[in-house]
Length: 193
Image 1: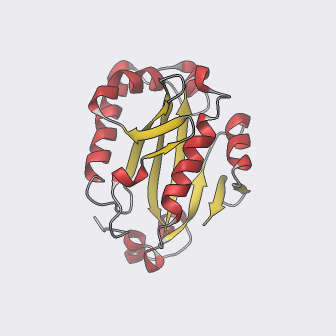
Image 2: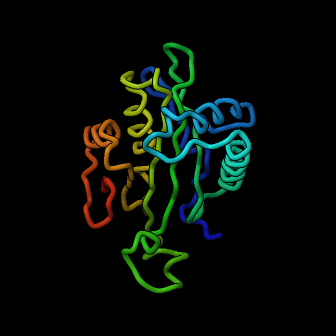
């Protein structure tokens, strides 16, 4: 594993904003994780809902990702966060950031660069899933905006990407409002630093 940014760890992804907070996914969040990943409504634009056993295995993998990133972040690391509506004192959903070298995004060639990226530059691929009751409360914007603000100061950050299903108009609207632009050759939305 290659460290990509000095002094960046999973706790650096957590934040507080007006009405929302983001914290690392923890063991106590297993029921929350299962509720989201097993829901047909939540998963409609993401993929097939998971079975309880699949969700438990996925949850354990997510915790492992967070543990691995607790001391240092490296190419390929993924950090999972819980979004909390602090006004209603309830969970809004989950979101994540996956740190990828630009080489993995198809911007450079060569096996050695695929583990390092050109000049150590990386992108943060963001993802989010919200409970239906949490939609239209501003949590999605707070999560993506807050995460972008937390990472924007990293000198090796090239930008952010957000991929979504073609018919997920709510997600497209969400990231467009935050300045993301559709990048046709990559089939995702992108926000450069």
